[in-house]
Length: 159
Image (cartoon, rainbow, N blue to C red; front, side, top):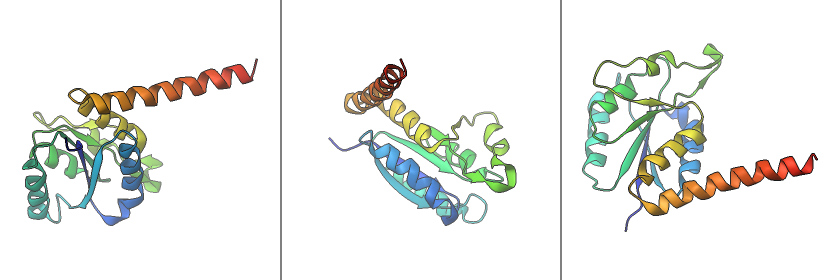
């Protein structure tokens, strides 16, 4: 059985570090990732070609879009694919965190999730894929158990 796929689509190469964090976290759940660059504003035909390529892949998949400022990429992606889309805008010094406003408000019929932390975007992708994939679901549960065990260890150390 082939691994579920997470397509991480970034608006520019400047987002690579943020996307690498998402990709690394996805791999902890047994998800295959692919990183691609396209802009809904500057290269819409290229973006559509990428989306068509991955939509033709029958594996279960989730798209994670990484774009700041005017985040057309997330809505553009969601309107072009049948799989879930998670917007994970990159950090921005200009906005004192991440520019989330264009990610939060989408037109009707466009349903992107917005998750700011790269590891949490990967976790949501794993939970979505895990609905139909027991291996991924088991990886999510194991990760949750490790996090809970760490809290219990920390609590025991301060008694």
